[in-house]
Image (cartoon, rainbow, N blue to C red; front, side, top):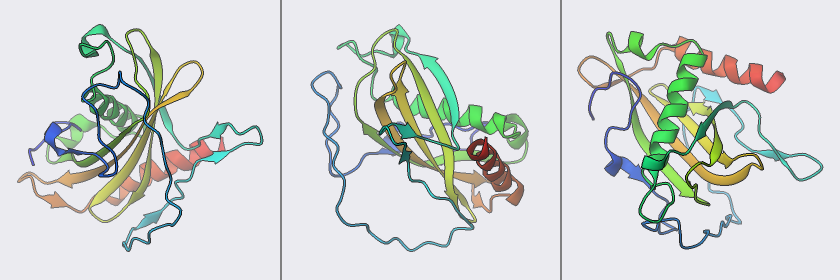
Length: 204
């Protein structure tokens, strides 16, 4: 794992995809169907913070997503593949950008952290739903969902504007590194800033 000056993808080979689906080389072919398991798998962990990650719906069936930091972007031509849709690997960059913006919004400076330590992405899972094309405007919604002593867990959703068409779902794990690039305990004030931000967004 490389030491980073700011939050970044160490290697795109580290991007993992769910084993239940095959990611095409281009999203031009067809929209993937989304299925949900009928049973819930129990995972044993020892988090220091527990936050519900469910996405509720209002009476009209529309998504009601709270606690997220939103970043609006527009697809640029150089992000497209030969089929005219956004290249799969670019979505990891979108998630990275949203995290960096979120980091600054909660009052943490990536540059300041890089003076003595570093933040690194240790895992990223992407679920493709629909493609984006040149000129499309979209919003990335990012938030911390959980944490442990040495890891922060985030989720991202990308929606195409203006109708909020689902484009992508992603889950990532962030670790804190010391000057020797070894994972260390995340400062409690860092976790606290993300939790306070989310609670403020949920209450507003």
